[in-house]
Length: 185
Image (cartoon, rainbow, N blue to C red; front, side):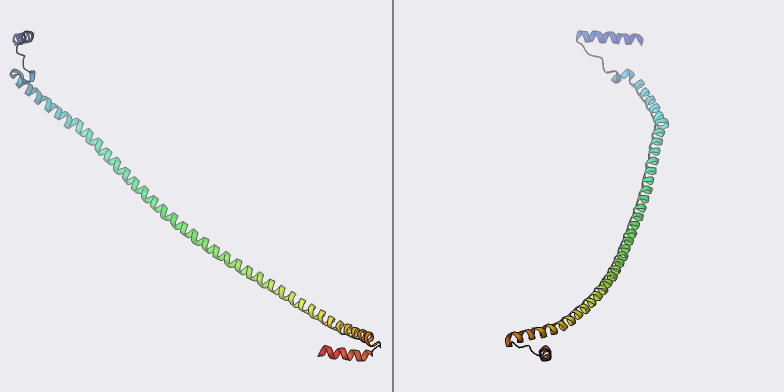
């Protein structure tokens, strides 16, 4: 067979140089076809065994581990989301409570300030009423004093006018009674 193979090589080289017929593609040669099928079957079985016993379990393990990691991460994310939602609810409740307290404090302060302003207003009104009463007393006293002086001034003026017009000094009692009559009437 070794010689036949060498002859084929020599023939092939000779035919290629002479422009003759080429040798067929080695996988299609009938002499080596059966051995190639056996080699292919052995290689397929070996590859199948390697893949099924070594590669697939490793890939499956990696995929399973990856799935566990993804599931764990999703569970952790869901837990954190729940905690964040709880924290948000607590924050909103605290904020609502703080607003209610602020409104209550504002209302209480407003009521205190209104009461204080009302008390100050009443005190001021009482002071003003007292000052007004004192002023009215002062005005009444001044009016009484002025009216008393008006009578004297009117009597003196009437005496002076009569003396100027008539040239005679009038009687003081007659002037006083005339002035009293005109002030009353």
